[in-house]
Length: 242
Ligand code: PXP
Image (cartoon, rainbow, N blue to C red; front, side):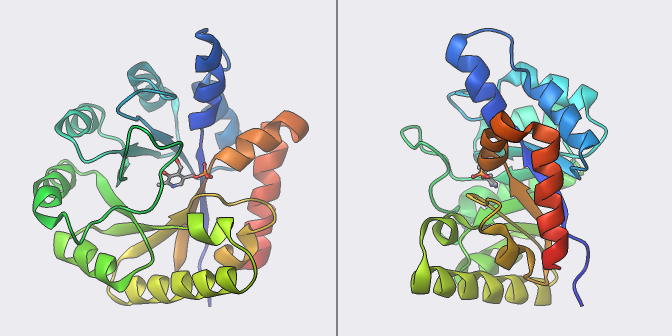
């Protein structure tokens, strides 16, 4: 029996388009409000250290405007911790960040950075922010999340999304096993990265998943079909897979 699966819409790339011109439009807050209307259960925004898309002002405006929960994606730095504590979003997803990368490549090495993450996770948790760790579907990383007391993990689906054939089937098995292991240990399991209309169904069918976070594809699809219809269609595909 599978439970409901929430859809978090990542609106970073609305800001990417805006910032390409250095003007005020399109506004990611407007996109967040439209996404809410289309049935998004939450909005995700990643304030990168280089501010290449979402800005500090966007986070302040999203916090003030949204009625659904904000999932604040952040690197494990003192600066980002300070911003999270100031805005107190519903959730904070800790992601690895490299300045030169095009997007979040690979999961957080929670197992290799336990000492560094310990205080950060505790500070967020103490502030009532639901902490999630963006990790690879790997038992070592799940164990580290448990040690750190993170209530949520988000499994990185990037490799699944990139490959096809046998490699994709093997990655789907890894994701399925990781979701089962984490859920058995009381961790809430989310997933995301690279999900599209074509590849979402097998992921949405993993019974232990509680939430998918999807951005880049939906913002691209919005150019052709509009943001609301694109989100509604993704929602329908997710629901059909449960
Ligand atoms: N989840 C996390 C933790 C991410 O970092 C991202 C990308 O910013 C996503 C989900 C969404 O990935 P995509 O934009 O490829 O749908």
